[in-house]
Length: 559
Image 1 (cartoon, rainbow, N blue to C red):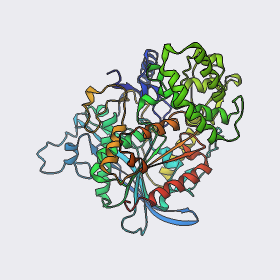
Image 2: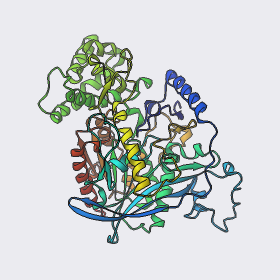
Image 3: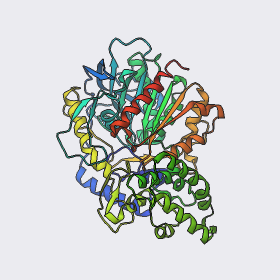
Image 4: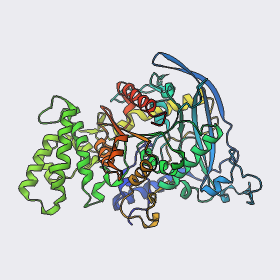
């Protein structure tokens, strides 16, 4: 085993698994991460002990207009405390306190750091007023790992939406917070959940980081949260949906297996990665596993198409991508699999074909041995203009920081929109939802000097996590859920310009699930001319809402 516990060296807090997380950092990355850790330790200082009592929930009333129809709702912003194990969780009431007659000794209030680890998970739930019994409920969360859910909350299906400039850097505050014409409240109640240690969620107790920051630890915390939520709000008999974005997609796979006896109606996977060996972020640290290069090629092609960097510009994007997909899993993958045995003449021919599909120079492709990572592509596509191409959304671009570096040093899309989302979330939460007084909202856990992520995972029926071989892969979890609950449907959505989790990677993973062929019919595919956060493009958000709403309407009766 080479990838067990990974320290996150990312500081930008935007819903994606970094190359270090997805593939395991090489010596250079580890050294830089250690430097960042030391710098953060200097400025962070002494840890703050969290208060024993959670803040009070806040309940407010509101209305949103969707499709010309007003939807009155009740919003609850609050927390639910979950244990770090099922046995511990079972001894806690909904208030997070030890139940009487458990035989367990209550934690010493004077020594909270010695108490068993718990997570106080923050959520905002929106309930349509006067709704019929059996109304669907959808649980939404972003990824990271280590990201709060402000992106989905303020950008996709909540009742309010922050307005950003599509594919451009915003001009700055004040940002517009508007009625969300595309809120999902027209078809489902929605619950936005911040992962442990992010947003207003907090982790507490002994070994709290080990208890909640990891593939399995995180998913089981969400499992316990959802069960507590269903109990608190009497929603056990409601149609239930999971909606995860980015790292939220592997969370959904593991979570769905943990929730197997709950029988979900559906799962929406936005910007999927289930097998980290497929990540285009860092395949150079995983030599011999070449499929990530092939799965990223269609996104390279879409990006070059958008920026008019192709030698010959195709008439339309989607037919062009269909051609590239076939080449990627055919001749290109075949060439990569030959490794050093690939004849020079064929290598030259493949490089020339890649030039036609990516716009990158043939000489560069030959020097790269036909293998280009996502960060290298972001740097090279618009190199002549001293411009870096976006990662989360390749439609975005920004000035090079170091024109001589081989890889992109930052993500222009993250820089373009992060301030708007952070400001809007804080403004909305504190003024309209009346929550967050005297608290800090953490867009991500990346600033915590102790933030690590345990990539070990035990699949249903698989070997113990300590015996895991290869990269993290939760495809068996989703397959297990689909076989255990053959009526459940899965909606896969993605953006053509997403270089963090290329859309073709998600399609490839779905086509390789270990499920009967007939269950493939339970999966639907939706792709959009946008990036990782497909909803930043308002035209796409409109269609995305229509697609998700249709998915829920078509599955809420269990058919």
